Length: 299
Image 1 (cartoon, rainbow, N blue to C red):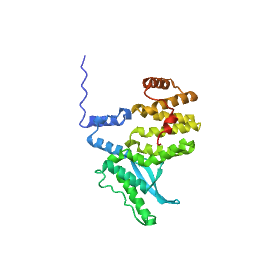
Image 2: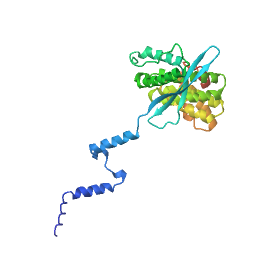
Image 3: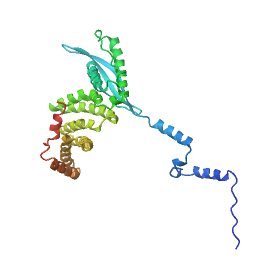
Image 4: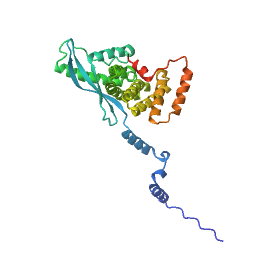
């Protein structure tokens, strides 16, 4: 029997052309992996990824001011708008601060970061013409630039003093309203606090959210909105577990179990976790309801 004749060798360039044609016909799932790409192609891919994934940063604007007059005092209030850059952010949350708030904040920062803040200067205080339109406009822009420089300083950006400056007044007011039984007004303030904290989260410890979420859960429950109360309490639970926030964990679990039964949710695991926690802490920790824990915050 005659042996089959060998296939003729491909002409120069023919096989390469056929391989490229076959590759072009491949589905995306069959395309070559990154290891087969050239350096030039990898660099191009990297540039495209960077274009699509712009880094998220915070921007601070002070778009407006207002003069507040009382019987014995008069001062300027600056609106601080906090928003994220690098992604579409339709939620431009804002808080208001006086120059004296900036002044106290700056001196607290200097106590910890005097060397790092050598070139970050708080706009000076005027001894006269404080309510002149030109002076107010000048200071508004200067304070806006001051916040940008603070945020650009890594140690300040990661310091708990930074979110405290932007949320502490609203937290205290919300908790005062909650203690007075004005739950809807407290809820509105807490929503503002949570929005600011959410924007700060990439640079802050997640435990920052726990007091706010716990207070929101209490407000929602007292406003007879169990689904919202369950949702925010559920969000607060993981950081309390991870970071050992004992004063919140058992109280959150107790609230979740109670609301879970009310809503028909599966709560067996939460009930077991609560039982184990109480047995472990018996005699060491006095149990309080979540409302009692929240009421004693920011007093």
